Image (tube, rainbow, N blue to C red; front, side, top):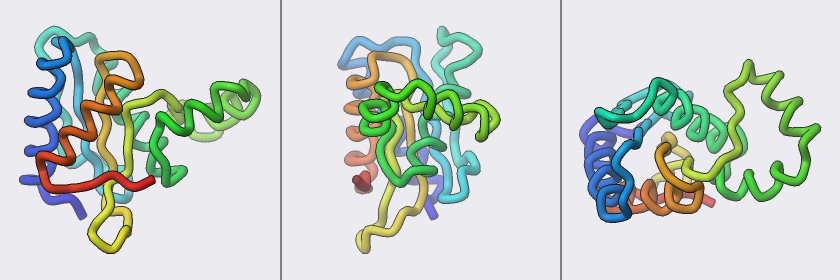
Length: 140
């Protein structure tokens, strides 16, 4: 499981990387392997849905054991599957880049992390920077 201290490091580093990339209004969510929030942070200026969007990206990565950016590539071309999965998951399925699974040294999933605030590719890069700063790595 991702420790709270690790989640805080991920978020701090992601916010720092976000500032470097010009993201001012962003949110970061880190979950355990069951999708329960370990930490959620929202910038002062981000709107009401930032945490929800970041959590959706994290849950989507967990649900498919893949980054939400890779899932966006597939599901972006399949509107029926996207609509169906969104309905089945109660609206929690969100195949937009920025969410990744977090794995331990053995490659086992220990949680997920996600950013909301920029373009999907930027959010993906920002959360990867957060993981790297915390000494963790993304799977897939």
